Length: 486
Image 1: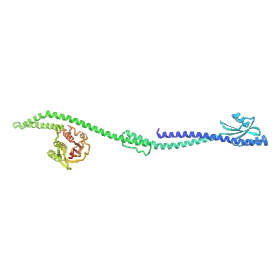
Image 2 (image 1 turned 60 degrees about the vertical axis):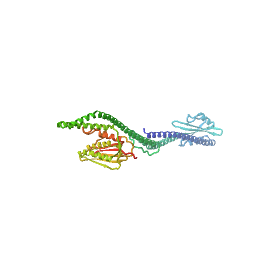
Image 3 (image 1 turned 90 degrees about the vertical axis):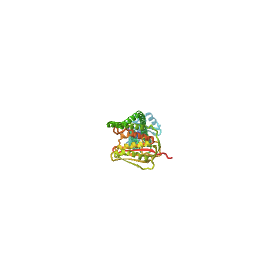
Image 4 (image 1 turned 90 degrees about the horizontal axis):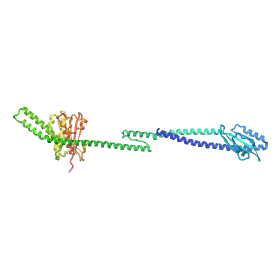
């Protein structure tokens, strides 16, 4: 049962109980007053009739007195008068005979109420003739009017109680539904929404009571849960990012050790093979087939040596030589070296510097390697007759979250490399900087170019971001911190 129903039933029960007690006390009081008034009227009436009867008795005799009494009793009223001589008995045998005897001897009056199917009130008063008392007057009156009055009073009280209960029930139900029922239903719905994880809706109860205070506290709880959920999501993302960085660092360490071992074990033999193949290819006494085969061995040896150099670059065991580097000059010289590759694929290279500040503290050779890797990848991904744009600008703060922790800086120089090639999907973007991950055919790439660029930029206190869509091309942005002012 709902609260409004319980309040209604409680209110009706309380009202009915109070009205029942009140009606009971009122009816009893009215009955006592009614009977007291009847007894007083009987006493007054009996005294007047006794005096009149005694006067007639003394003047005209007994027969005239009794005749007068018969005439008085002959009326149609509810009161009846009867003379009871000394040796006579009362009309109803239940009358207290001892009390009646005292009245006959002139000791006061008697009032006796007899209940039953025909309830009556009997009153007795002595008739005095000087010193003689020939008998007593018996006055009887039916109590049915009293019972009718009681029934009327009870019915009136019951109707009053019913009307009052119905009015109070209606008011209680209406007020309970408005003040308690509706707000409680709103609180229940809000609790269900919170349980389902919807923390964005707030309750607005336009009332000033305990329920409104509870709604306010529930809103505050929703806000705190929302903030805690936001913090939890951020912390979870940070932990996932940290785990990814840790795994990435572990892979870098593993690849670095592998690269050092490969370089140590294969570097010298490959140099020997390459040198002997070169000698054979340059021997004029050798046949064309031998020189051609020697040339192929030399080219493949050099390719293997290049892969080993990439592994060594990725491991970066060497010491950095950092100095002020003019990025515009570095970019221009790098593009001049790469232009033949771009021209061979019929791709144009465009360079633009929009800000005068272009110097950073860096290792020029390593930055050139970063630009080379990114531009070569962009050229290889571009279709014929398209262009690769390279631009320089100053960024006061990175526009996007970096892929790695970045030290505080006074600003960044952003190098942007954009192409209009095939682009990359979401799965490829997530792994684009992983070592040995490549989408090129076997023999066309080692999957180390972007990993090397990523590591170099990270060691310089910067980071790389990438945006790409399938069929629309890719955009790499390299952020390098500006040098501190002297």
